[in-house]
Length: 123
Image 1: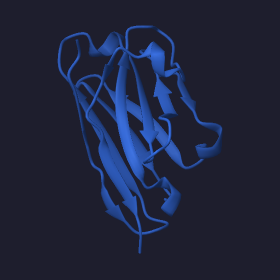
Image 2: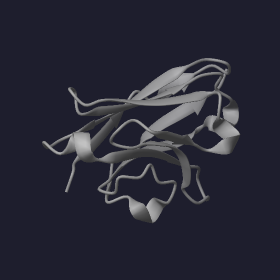
Image 3: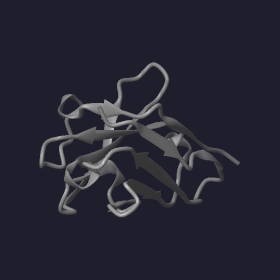
């Protein structure tokens, strides 16, 4: 099991930016693929972005251009930079870890999940 702790969520005005962080415990972080998902109340969790162990990335089509996922293996941390935020981005964001070598968009490919961090975009 890989404990994951998200941070960086909060309140931001429309058009603003946030950087979410997800810190992982353990010595295997550099071999993990990491993903970000999000979930709005009453809706299914949806894929946002993923990065595999060698830095290949994948993004949700509707969010491309506004997001950047990155990782720092020296800090066991994955980041999600979000720009040009919109009110519809107001959801809980979850970090997830996968032992596959693929930057998967599929929730079931991920083995461990963080507790989530709330992002609220409002004026």
